[in-house]
Image 1 (tube, one colour):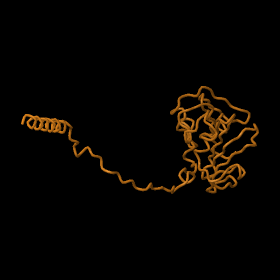
Image 2 (tube, one colour):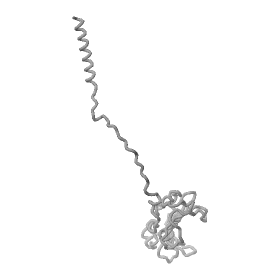
Image 3 (cartoon, rainbow, N blue to C red):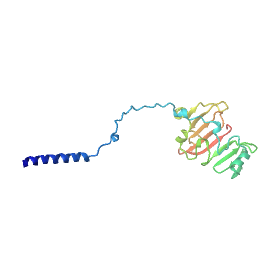
Image 4 (tube, one colour):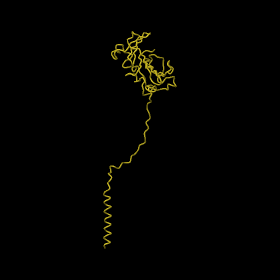
Length: 214
């Protein structure tokens, strides 16, 4: 009889221990169970426009420096920029108004409006924010790249025509300039004004904006 009670006692003890272990295990909340993700196939987006199509042609209105453009008079330049550091007159009777970083040139001392601009150093406002010290490729990328200039006699956008008010706009690279250094020339839709960007060792050295064809 004692043996029978001993066996019953052992069985009850084992059942009690097992029940306690099960009750102490934390239940996993249903909300922590992550659902199975269904992955959709990757969509391939085809480009709709090329870089050449998203960059506009150069326009005449863009060709201004520090608010000075082809319609700006001598008096207006002084009102906007103050008195020049120096005024010189060359042998061709042109008058050069020097403002340090930029020179504004009147082709004749009697001219009322500026004839062309020379940019010598970094300045506040330039066409497409091209600055002295910029790299050749960075400057080229600011204009449409419709053609490889190396394969098209320097032309990289538009169609080259004789300079005139014929509605043409184009840009080309000249690597046979007098200095033997490359020059980027971009012409507005009216043939003039136009811009020349001169390079040395692959960076912009100086720039010119002409308001009449020279």
